[in-house]
Image 1 (cartoon, rainbow, N blue to C red):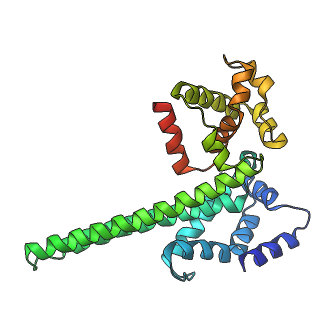
Image 2 (image 1 turned 30 degrees about the vertical axis):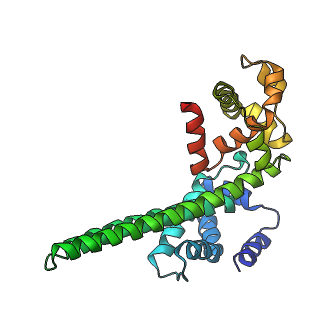
Image 3 (image 1 turned 135 degrees about the vertical axis):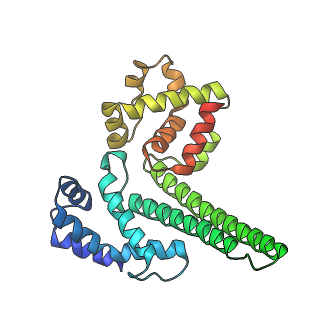
Length: 252
């Protein structure tokens, strides 16, 4: 249903892509912004429902959080980073809903603890532990869900470069210094507008240009080409969990 409504929105504006629409909104077209959000309410409800594991109505607080998150995605979206609005919005919506669930779980747990004064200490302690375990289990499940979805999105980005997740794992530099060096090259790559354009538009690593900017041989850059591209994708994408991996590389 969300896809149908999205297509209807696009059909109203056949000469304008969704990303072009967002660009106009970011320039201050509030009417267009309201129309876009209204058209994608079913998409928002579907994403929120998938996180909450139940049917979400527009009157639910979670749906309101989803609307705010979708609007946030519109405001923060940048097509230069090589992703679609809807994939970006899906990640933002899921994260905001999970944050909301976690916050409510903690508050409910506190209210429960303070409301147990008339019960004995053993009951209060048992209830508190059970709730803590339940919250922890819920958080872990949501983290696993987001981590899996991040990997799927990462794989999709890799495929646009004719790469696979398995290739990156197998061809990751064996030594910590080599990984750090490749990471440095990836950072230089994404921080350069011209080099990033070559990477995203031509789907290739600008080895010759990078060779002039880093103290690394062309042969080394070519050997680590796939890993550098993968790190560049993570650095420019909304990959919360995969960025933890990058931190680990830097701290090695």
